Amino acid sequence: MIELQNVTVTAKPDAVLLDDVSLTLDAPTTAIIGENGSGKSTLAKVLAGLLDYTGSATINDVEISTGRKHLTGRVGMIIANAAAQVIMPSVAEDVALSLRHLPKDQRPAKLDAVLAEHDLTDLADRPALSLSSGQLQRLALASVLATNPEVLIADEPTTMLDARYAKLVEHQLFASPERQVVLITHDMALAARCDDIIWVHDATIAHRGPDAIQQYLEHIG
Ligand SMILES: Nc1ncnc2c1ncn2[C@@H]1O[C@H](COP(=O)(O)OP(=O)(O)OP(=O)(O)O)[C@@H](O)[C@H]1O
Image (cartoon, rainbow, N blue to C red; front, top):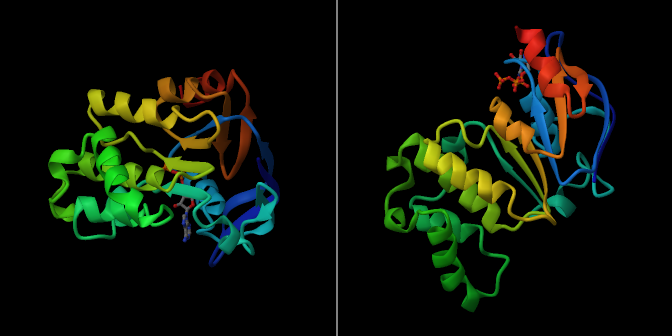
């Protein structure tokens, strides 16, 4: 469960990126929708422990700002710019880095399984930075899911993908009922699949619930 109480994020000199947001996220899957620049990624970065905030933000009762050590490995995030997230030289090495939580003897088989599941086997030995944007995005997801996080924050995880891979990734995002997924997306069909939908507007929550998509679409015309 994710709980935000009066969360505000500011940037110098006087920008308010998130304005006094209070929110409980307890559905298995939540979509965050809204216009460019409305504050969605800011909210995602707060949840992933990447931004300072005032107020309180907890994941499974751990305050994010002070509990990063407890949340490491339990909260995974795919950032919007997936290329920046891939840190190891090759595809296989990047995924392997995410398997350190497993006993050593289990890692090779798991690595093969993860590569196969994400259709990355043929790319295993490729330098990660030689991948296309969509391949990089799929690698970022594979590496994050390989850590088996309790909570996944996915910021536009399908933007670079063709229809086939968008479908595969969609399946992977919704595959584990025990994992809480928070999905930032401009894809309204993907948002509609989520159990809860939140429309962020002007650094705050404009609307929440099943009709949030409709309200948002009416707003943007
Ligand atoms: N360091 C900063 N200083 C000033 N403004 C910032 C800073 N970081 C982000 N912003 C602004 O905060 C607003 C919210 O940004 P955010 O990335 O959360 O938007 P978003 O809803 O994710 O948009 P998009 O759909 O384009 O990804 C934007 O107007 C952005 O320009």
